[in-house]
Length: 218
Length: 314
Image (cartoon, rainbow over all chains, first blue to last red; front, side):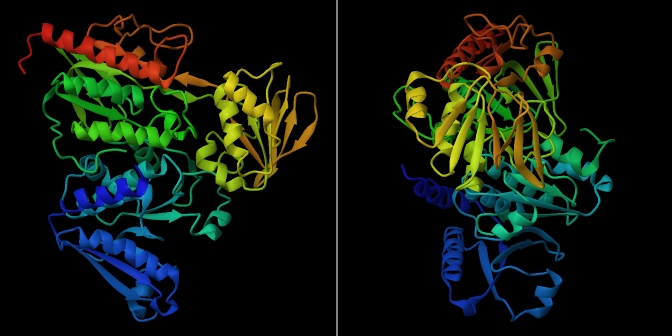
């Protein structure tokens, strides 16, 4: 069974569970009319079309919304943002989620739309110990453990009420970022410019990295 | 891969069986337990286990050839068809409370009448200078994850097992040259893979040699052999075996052998009633995905029997 079939089926079966409206802000250079634009929007439209009109893709041509672009520091084309009601950026994708990244993306949308977040009680209990944090997760599409890191960090961001933001960076699509960090192993995760975490980490380890010792355990 | 949502997961109830682990052994156990109509949950740190990073699996009976990830996709599909819930978490402590067990993680607590430990193993490290320093910057434990970064470069694979041979064969598809560095006189791969390695012009084996240091600047540039020779290389892939994840089991009095493997009998029972074990964490002499799954299935049957004896109503 081709992999693309599995993910299309997943999108069809799971996106209809979205029970509350969710907006996805997509900053993209429409003027380029490049394959990048067509490809990115065609993937995102698949999610939108299967969401019972609960997901709205807000297309924001780069250069047309200078205030927003400045506020969210838009430097890449495309940049896909999940923003909460207070305007906090929670999750940033530097390419349209596809392949094995489909599942954590849908999961993030469902949780953003009100589905239960397993990690939320513990995150909220330790929120006062978490400094405003940026987690960069560098992935490739062929990496077996990358979806799990994306899932965990995304759920942490969704539970933290704006205190944690996550950047998901496919470094095959953005090789300059991989070179900047000398990345040759994925998943490659950087929390607040600290030493990178190489490979797959469990939720305990991630939470410990965020707050160090004196963690409140449920 | 893992649950997209928490639908059907009740964190307050006492489960019949909680399976700890995320690989084929854990899922095989859960599939049979689900078919026995047991109330089950899988709690695993890493979905897919070690096999998810295997480039090619050609010895899982009935499947001629498949990627490790492809195999785990099939396990996931089967799991999903039975609506078996999976939670990505790590249990840090198990305690016995009257007729059941309480499992503690940082995020939640769980209750269950029986447990199957399918916690697998972690990759062994060399423990040499430079290994940690260059982790992710030239040192890797996963060819399928990181192989694409070494296109047209020279890499080495440390180890002589079948896994090491398969890693070398995978890397040879895209790198310039692969050196297998092995301390023995002959690699221990399956004959079919040994032959493929010997016939591959891009693979060269350096026998009776160990690496004592990894050197570089920003990224790996060379390794130092035990004969003192410095050897230029762009990437080091370490495949020297694994260590069973049995610390959790030891904490509740489960017996292990001198290698840290959990001792089980032919019905996958441990010395602690209600706790079963299977797969790479257990003490089988020959460990493969199929043997782990088999032990997991037997563990499910044993757990079913055990819980039935407790007269738990279904």
